[in-house]
Length: 158
Picture (cartoon, rainbow, N blue to C red):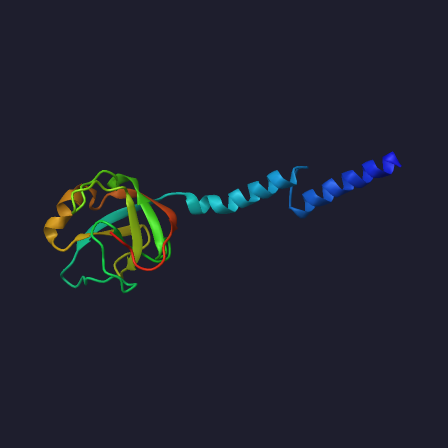
């Protein structure tokens, strides 16, 4: 009887491990590892070349979602590498002076796309005129670390 229970327990453990696609006798650990393997590529930061843009010269006051563009928050992406409605963290923008005088926390909203934005690029909206680009000019055409950190619904806020 004891031997039958031991065999049944061993078979159950092995079936659970095989059912989870595991290579070990740790089905929970194997499941967590499998999920982590699938999610990890999504969490890697992108190295994207930044271009700055401001309102005027064909740039309107609304993004491709129909929302008002927000200075130092709206980012235009290619829509493939990074999709619209993605909350981004760009570490190189942390501490920059915002239009209201506060320091930037590094968070941007991917709410715009553009024909000139191809894979490996990101455009950052600086404000209403060319002088709004001054605080970020040292980042223009520089490769930035861009991390997707979440999603947002509706329109971005300041």
